[in-house]
Length: 254
Ligand code: ZN
Ligand code: FE
Ligand code: FE
Image (cartoon, rainbow, N blue to C red; front, side, top):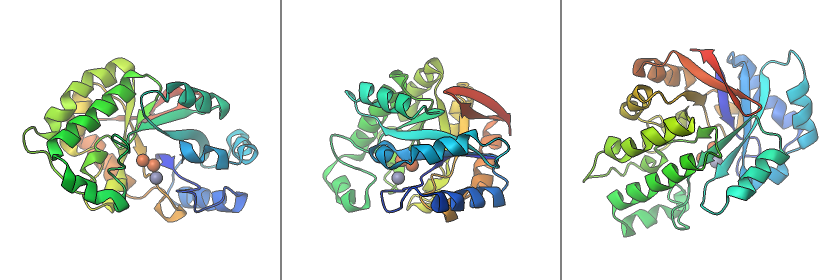
């Protein structure tokens, strides 16, 4: 089992201390997670205790093995900054995520009213255009929460979700970018894993690799519902998931 998406400082409310990180490691250990990807949102990259993280990554035999990642906000024009951050932290992997459309944080609880002002199909189209641009940039090893746009339960009417995602499949395969099976959606109003089963099946058919992610923002959520993520992956046809070391994907048997 692996969990490649865990936030230590969350949205800035916690400090990156040895004691606090140890709580994440303990939670992972208790659930048999062998690889744990510590991933801050890139806006909090400066809060990472790099010495502490380097020490954890180098400790032989440490269980779980610690990988270093960043969840980067993809916006056209940020490419150089993202590349620099990834290099500075010597990341094992980079997650590319889209949380903003034209400056609107569509997934943020304080900005849900923004949905009332917009056409849902147009939001979906704009969202997936950004995700396609993120994949095309080839900056990322993983695309974060692929169908995050469903978070509040808004569904497109004129085109299905699969139709919105279909143009992305070839882009992902060509870029060699993996998609995470992220269980945080189960803890959100939509109550579904990201990505939805129908999308996961299309990803499998398109030979897009996957990894596993709880997107925990506190120790209690480390590994949350990863059993369900494994079931979803297997149902879609996957028998392998990806881990990442030094920006290289490594297959793990599911
Ligand atoms: Zn977050
Ligand atoms: Fe995110
Ligand atoms: Fe996250």
